[in-house]
Image (cartoon, rainbow, N blue to C red; front, side, top):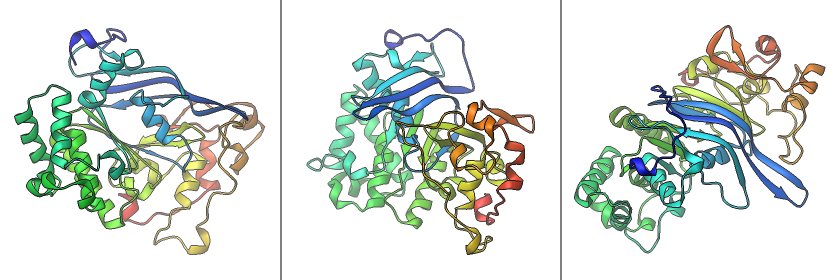
Length: 354
């Protein structure tokens, strides 16, 4: 994006941070009340990392992804501050971009890969036309862009000639998803937001695509935000995990550390519910209770109605992040995180320990 399209968010440079999210909320006014589906979220995303965002269905993961691109559809209301830090130039205040700037930002700086690849393609256009249209719409060099498209498709183990000639319905689900990943990267964005990109695929194809994503990150130096409800899937991919519950993050940390010894009762319960080869079937169980209604989120800690460690403090006070064992990279929004391991034991297989 050119300098004229930047809305400065301040002159302070953050060389290791590519996204800074501060007090971001997404809400909807409904007939039965005010629904907040992202609730005052603050997080920093590091340059060149793969961060996994995990949680139950309905926890706010997809809406968080939409907020990063200022893509919350009406009548949703997005508030807070989202700052994007390019490697060169001034920070960008994402929520201040006009429509034209935002269109360019979404492809040239940050791109999205949705879970339904077929829904992202125009069925009347060949795959080659999709790439050409995208490149020309952003006034990029067509020849260079198509050469890059071929390179990306080959990197994803696809035959560029065959794929270019095909219409979307002529590709298998796995081919569609890999083609969509290539299309999202054709303008060389710095960040890829992937919202459940493998949800409709079989296990073998899921593992194949996550492996390819890791290879693309290493080769092209991109940041990947991988949104999923499938903890084992993201375990071998992400450098860091952010766990969402009730429309906000409750735990952050390096992936191995979180999987080995989660510090939030919800994360531990989530891991306890994951099928694995070390835990007897009778010891694996879903989390008791129901996820909160966005119109009626419990006061205090939102997890307290389902938590075996809940006390009056949890009902009265919404916990801020605590540093786990004094490690500023390990954060848990729980007043009683030190007791979580004893209260909610779990075991993971070697594969899931990454």
